[in-house]
Amino acid sequence: MESTVATPRKFHVNRCIDNSPVFFTGLTKTLEQKVTLLCVKCNKINNNVDGKDTCSTCSNSVPVTQNGDHFEQSSYEACSLTISGPSLSEQVFHSGPKIEKTRRKALLPLPESIPDSSCLTNDKTSPDKPPKVNHDFKNNMDSSLKRKGDYESPTKKFRSSFPGPSTPISNRNIELSRRIWQLFMENKQTDVVFQKKMTLRDKLHEILIKRFPSCGLYVVGSSMTGLGANSSDIDMCLMLTDSEIDQEKEAKDILHIVHSLFERYDFLFDIEVIYAKVPILRFKDAVSGIEVDLNVNNAVGIRNTQLLASYARMDKRLAPLVLLVKKWAQYHGINDAKHNTLSSYSLVLMVIHYLQYGCYPPVLPCLQRLQPDKFHAESDVRTLKRFEDLPNFESENVENLGDLFIGFLKYFAVEFNYYKNVMSVRLGSVIPKEIAMMNPSPRNKKAHWKLLCIEEPFDLTNTARAVFINEAFHHVRQVFINSWNCIKHNPDLDSILN
Image (cartoon, rainbow, N blue to C red):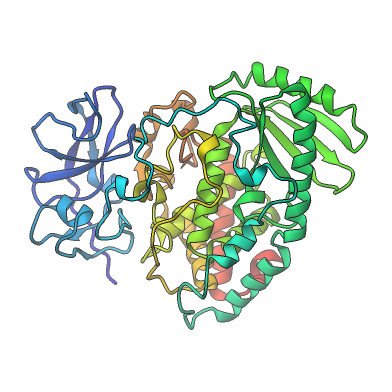
């Protein structure tokens, strides 16, 4: 389909009274029409009329137009829409006439109608006011984590959530697709390894409650999302309080206490505290041979584990693509944040962003828009479900794994604008760097938004801030370009992995 690029026009960027920016989520036919906005703070849709200072989403807040803040519409990568009938906001967010999409990359890959958040759950508690819970992390943990050995592998749940193929297989790149699936089946985390990790978690929790009686110990990361390999280590989060702690001092002191505690046990060895922005205690288990990275009170890791696990259940093509992208990035030396390249978490967010926004029709929806009451930054981690009820979404995208992988390489080789845009899984789109710098988050710093920018879905920081050296950034980009040039002429994994 031929792309139609909208004529650049200048728009005001509205802000709520607390100075949190409000995003445009589509085009309007004239400046006097209703504009559909999304507030960064409350993550809610706000229908605002130009010139009228009212905000329908932020309680006791008033949008204020900042006359000095303008952005060219082209910088939003907005889709061009043919408008007919009611206003744009009514067409996109409510049932009404369909909109003809005239551009490959839609800004809002959303269903025609979005139910009210109260219809998505039986819990009537406002997402802005988390329910009061007991501060005892031990007793408020998911019941599936209370019983030794009573765990269900995320890959097992992943298999059971798909009665059949989500989309038919296209005729292109079938052999490449078969190789990707074979690679996934040979390297994905097995149920045996998963159970070993859960057994180790139980043993460690028994040790920790002797020193911290009300603590919670959460397994996070790829071990729980279904996106990990069989050789992956295990990440754990020790929760001691429901409030933030100083990661630079308090977390380090706690990890040293845990270090002294673990030294008493012979099956734990190579124990060391590693100082980083989020310090960890790294050690190995002599029984299983598994390496563990333990952090303290990094609750965002628990939230994003639930989010990524939910995306893995939405479409079974995500997990094989993530495993391949990790293996490809490791082979080319761009999967190491300590050496100014990409972390595994950033790579996963890049794959999800591509499947939300870089391909059309989108493979994945934006869960934080569809279910803002279930996926938000203020949720109490003790109330999160391991397998959340998900919206009824079936992608119309029929591309196979080979098509999608080549499209992923092409998107980040020649299509994504690294100099202007930020990948946002939270919004299912891109946002300008100028907006990301102003994200209202205590951990967010303007200096972090330099070269390669990926928004963390909950704390709104840049997960790719390690890529701040020009040489490393250009190396990452060149790997994408070289791999895309190789595989588009020779659709074989050996062309990029050998």
